[in-house]
Length: 328
Image (cartoon, rainbow, N blue to C red; front, side, top):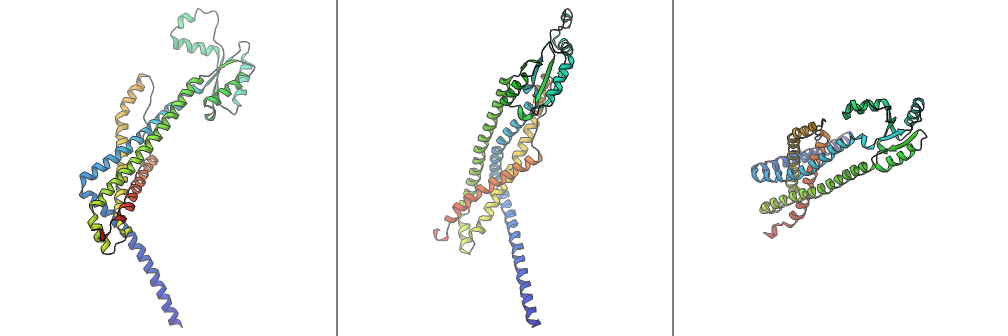
């Protein structure tokens, strides 16, 4: 009995080893086909480089437009004064009543910060900025009112929310009236929304073109190797086995095209950085362009790889099935 069970145990061990060996050789074969397809691309460098350049430039445009939106959002986020509400305090209010108003406004859930500018401080700043310092010395009294600057929270900086907050703040008894440039906010948000929608539309069109370019390139490669595929099918090769090198070619096109796009975007940002700095210097401001982060770079390469796989899969699934030995 012990010999019988021992034989069964050895048989199970052999089956497990056979399954592991099959899986190991399957994975090795996949990577071998990937290296082989990369070598095939290396044998036709000019054609491969032209295809990669077209794919890279097609990916560069949506990536550049994405960075444009990203940098514009960075600029617009710095325009806190665009959503800042100026509340002019009534002249009859004394300093204690005004400070009470400031503390009360700071408790509003829609308010991020509150800053009080006294009439004396406002006059001093106006003298320094306007250049009429000597002329203002002849005034009998300070004509400027006390002002409370209210910065809404991020959620309440949209035009409708900011306008509702302005109405609410103007109802305070210490406030004479408030001011908010609603038109500027609406224009800014409308332009950003339009830019985002344009980027999405253009990106979808260009990504579709990338898929079609890869699919057409793989189709031409399949037609070029038609006789070789017919011979492989004669000796018993399955469609899955024949598909693998072409799928790898599409993946390699996507990976290298994504790297090409990243390098192109990085060079473009480097080229424009000095010009942007010069323009910012004219307006006495400092601004530096934001490029792709490591996470965004990984997403770009992953997206390009996915498009390469999809384009090649559509081609091989469509055309390899039609190539049969009896059609020689």
